[in-house]
Length: 295
Length: 113
Image (tube, rainbow over all chains, first blue to last red; front, top):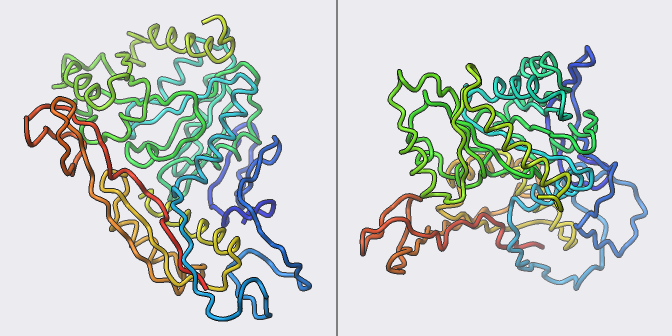
């Protein structure tokens, strides 16, 4: 449990920094470095004479005169969104990015669509002009963070263990390890999964969904939540289009019926075709974050 | 299986609210799951069932209310029960329709003592 605010139980995920040799596990920390409000209220109007841990649910065996002492059964109307705690932490991340003028992009896709390859090429192509860093999310292994470091950008690996997505708290923890420069681009490469990451806001500026032409043009229909919550769709592996039954127009039509504002870029990280469109898009986003008045 | 982490969130939420209300026990929790919320109600219920042990909800009756999805046709304004995102209007056959209900996923209430 977070000892500062009591917001949760330990979450078992690991953070790996390729620039250090060792791997270590975290017992859930979240960032209290930048100021934020804890919006939950502890209405303790009584003082406890004894010490106790709030790590687990406990019953008070001593008497409290909080309300009447007869039958205390009460109905509490809450109507609280269950994702509200994640949304609150995501909003704190978002404010941090805004304050530092960091362009944060949440890259989501199914496994194998080529997110890491796109990022490797992007880092190689833009490192002379843009500062970039990457938070990598995978269930296991530091493979992707090592690939990114090799391409020339600092990276932090979050291993979610059995978890199927990144959440706002994990990003918060990773930000303590990764020195994100003001005015830079931060890519968050989410766990390869088109279902669960759709539910979890990380505080990103925009969400980029990557699909590849080997996956079938009905992907948007099968995984509507992800396509509804993204702002850009990259269709990767365009070099394979002559050999597969992938209809780009159909994919766009399906995705637009769910999300009319979704933008598309068709590219091949392997051959470099279309990558310029992606770099232009990135530069536009970076400008709107870093110097919004000039856009 | 994001339902598992969401079940953990529900337990945390119940802990916070019970503490706020200075409750000794939680007798009942009512959770609304919309058919179009992106949450699989059965998976969520199983996950919560596994996780309540050693939690504030150990003795609570878990009440899950499924809220049907609702759509409104963009062409003829007809409102109908929507079981999937991509359906044509049952009245005029047009597409698409706007989701007008069934996206909620929230804790409605607790009964505490």
